[in-house]
Image (cartoon, rainbow, N blue to C red; front, side, top):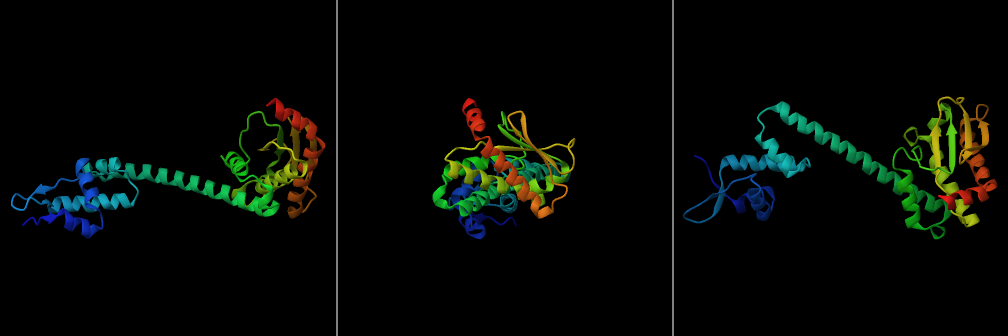
Length: 249
């Protein structure tokens, strides 16, 4: 015998509101039966099974539109295509959330280093969002004023995915200079160059090379110190040109 279950009973059983169940009916995912004697709307076993499937897919973050398609498929291969697409979307969401986490960590770290009273939180957050768009500072930045090019041996120090801390240290250094000199320092573009020597690096102001160095004879821990010190010195020595270029842009 096909047992009928009241909507209120289904609501209690699966801890879901009757309003949500009615909405599932409105969009065609479920179909209730009207009891002529009591006038109650009820679900048969087929629709109770469908409800369980709907809730299962909802727990996996599938949209109602996706669920509507999944419920019509009897072919596992077709269902698998939707699963693969959902996996891709989840991975993209994880990447985005990881990026947001990195941005907040950077803001908090810089705030602790230079003092919360010395920074503009909104400006700092805006900067971190921009510089963290893709692979931190190793991104294309139109009309870059300050650029650092480096050989492949320096990449691990710059890449956060390889536990490199150069980018975070550059952010802190820029903020310190801004507060010390009361000037806004433009974002610094970081760019690897396979044609350069392994531990060679160059610092550009616009298209002009203002520093060309090499870290081959320096210990790993000191290499980062050397790069940060050289970038800081270049900025301070060329602050007038940097200011003028920033105004032009």
